[in-house]
Amino acid sequence: MLKMEHIEAIKRMSQSESISTIARTLGIDWKTAQKYSDKDDFNEAVEEKVKGRHSKLDPYKPIIDELLEKEEQQNIPRKQRFTAKRMHSYLVETCGIEELRNSYITVSRYFKARKTGKRRNYYTPGTMPLVWHPGEAQGDFGEALFRVNGEERMMHYFVMTFPNSNRRIALVMPGENCECVCTALQEIFTFIGGVPSRIVFDNATGIGRRVQKILEMNEGFSRFRLHYRFNTTFANPRSGWEKGSVENAVGTIRRNLFVPVRMITGSVSEYNRTVMMRDSFEFEADRIHYRKGRVQSQIWEEEDKEALHALPEKNFIVHRIDSMTTSKTGSLVLDSKHVYNLGPLHPRQAVLVEKTAFNISFYTRDGEFIKTFDRLYGDDPQEVYGIEQLLSALVRKTGAWHNSYVREHMEDGPLKEWLDSRDSSQLRSNLSILSSASGIFGFADTCLAASRLVMKGHFPSLEDLESYCSRLRECDDSFSLNTTGVSLSMYDRLLAKEAL
Image (cartoon, rainbow, N blue to C red; front, side):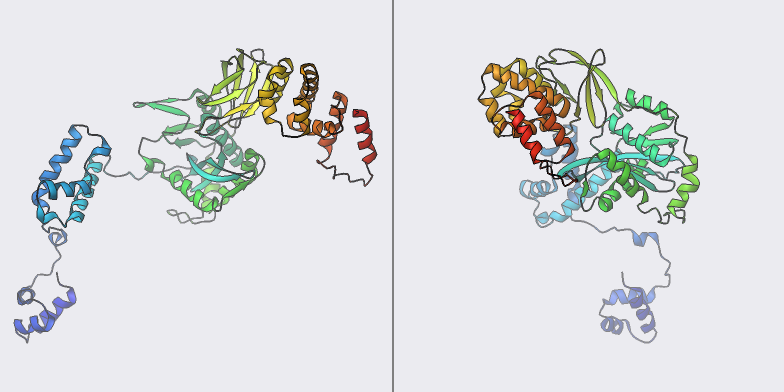
């Protein structure tokens, strides 16, 4: 179709020039010049916008459709089905359709159009515009790289948004289980000073599981929800638009707040309270709402915050308590892959296992505390040991010293060399002293103190070892924190002499 300026030129020239002259002057076919010279109706018709060009693939589309439909009927594995490239080769080489030899793009375009049409038939034809009321929220997880205490780790982060005001808040979490979800929500409720009336979650969030069309909610989350008195809704599978606010926020926070990689020092929980929630909540708070034309922080204060429910008077402890039995080596497998080893002092023992987002604690059936470990996360199986418990058991089984995890975790140096050279009786005495001190000062500090004292030629007594461990607690490794300026060397010599 000619441009309007060309049509105008034809109509203008037709008043004084012949059709041949017009065609020659404008460089167009004389039939085209004649057509627009005679045209007197310039209304725009829908038919003119419809693409009705003939494609050389049209005669062969039934062949393509038949092959693809046969694949679906026979349930051919997805990776063994026709691709656009293989279909083009089949039509040319097998079917001998030479006119399509240089028409791969045409075949590929038809493949894409056919796939799009199928998708529209399988799923809903479009999305519904949704209305979000003050106090309603959405929650979802994302994943990003962090540098935690010097170590780069992929961590999860939980995001909550309030679509009415478009405010966002995020926390870093070690996983996506029920304890992590409830801990994140509890921290957010405390931070904002209230509880949303309703929260929409992703179908895959670790607070429930869907069996066909029925979603079974985790018991721990049910208790949490009843305590804080809020309603929940779960988005349908493959329906991200039902919680589009938090879907967008997960990506926005990752691109803006986690670039460059964030450094976390100390406790992740403390970092969330002092840094992460504040930074994410203040991000774009002064931006104009994309629909309401008002500042987002103003909408939050005037509408969302006013609609929050009050926090309950009683605190809720986010944990899960299970009863389990240890193996003959005193270990348990949690989360289907991670091993927590309490040592041979607790073989085949019924214990209570308390799970929180960050820790795993073990108790006897009578409630006596045994040990707390950092909770293990990740796809690869891991194993963690209670070194103090293993050391206590090793006192009774000194024959296992050379192949023990205690020796493996001990740094090479004078202490390990000393213990390697002892006979069974001497080793039992030395390990007993180490075990007693470790119960008070921890395995690492006890070994550091014992190693320094062993350099004097004798293994320290329990009193000497505890005294030296106390000094390590008060000072740094080289005692450089002596702010009085008084030399303590005479006490070092005295301590070493007593150890002899």
